[in-house]
Length: 501
View 1 (cartoon, helix red, strand yellow):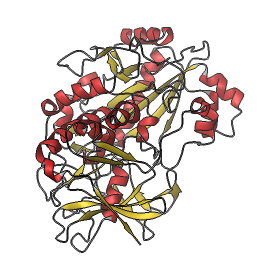
View 2 (tube, rainbow, N blue to C red; view 1 turned 45 degrees about the vertical axis):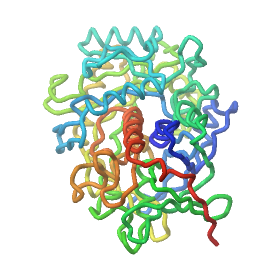
View 3 (cartoon, rainbow, N blue to C red; view 1 turned 180 degrees about the vertical axis):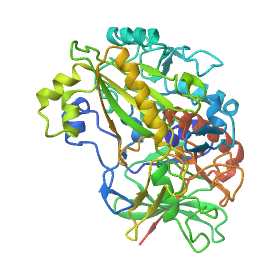
């Protein structure tokens, strides 16, 4: 979402842009919509194993394709709230302020919503918008509309999720049951490939290389400015030289890349004089919940249209501290559940799924320096992570459990997400104003190294409890404007390539 949107923002500027992608284009094929292939057999999982602090290997929820993880996301594209850019008190500590505010990002939010076909409605009391959404909200199907009415009668304020899907008059979205968690076979989901990379490539100044693994970011002999990157492609190690390098590998991989780029001038890793590269790793406290009514089937196909923010801000919903956010997810199916519960007969899982509404509950994770990304002696990625602010998460789960029971669902089955669920990873290369306590400046440029930027969620000083994708995209457009203004056109020649033995 960061790199693709940045490339789009730089298309047509006169700068020469080389977009390097570790993976390839994800194929459009019938298996895109097959839950057994996607969830049961992991057909599109192509990330290497990462390791927990105790050495246990796990397969992360990370995908290396053009478009990255947006190929599999649910298209949820809300803005962070104005208050999220200020310091916010939580049960377990303070969520720090950002080095820029909501008003600085607001015009870029509007551009990103237009770019990513965001459909929404101005019915969320936690955010006052400056203008209408580009496209009308995706309507609730009958069962979800009835649920919204029951939640409203019980004192909650269900709102419409801003969604990036192609439901324009000539759009290709069919509102199927295989959107959230699946790649879109019709390219109707507003992902970074479809909405940013492909349009950017229509500009003659943008080039894409796939199956190209970036090994290191290179600097000049002084270590003061970047001079390009070292990559591995087609079995060869090559260098591409350029005066500006923007890193957007996902918060974990971006930190790993900077750590791999250590040198005599940067022995702790590139741009790491603060010692914070890889530290302050954040990922939302997540719980998946199924609210089950055995008496009736939920015949909804496209379920992800409703969310609840009554417990989002301090003082809302009757609580003292900020708690979190609740949204519906794509409709779960028995074959999807089978991948998580292999010992339970699929016929039973199917009966349960047919009678459930399905939810994602998440609360904020605070930036703890001991939650960090490092490299093992073998160069593998290791993630040390202990959840925090857990009391708030448990409180939110209890509140939503009661609300859903009052809304007619006597059974609630829930499961906390593990370390492998890192869709909302953030914070490992944090931005700020002080080089001693941050890696990047407010423009997401490295304090230590000229010409180096990081434009994924690694720059987040905190991780507000909303899906981060739109904020990543809006910030990438903001940084693109900054780079275009800062980079001399005569310094933007075609990147030079050299082959190493």
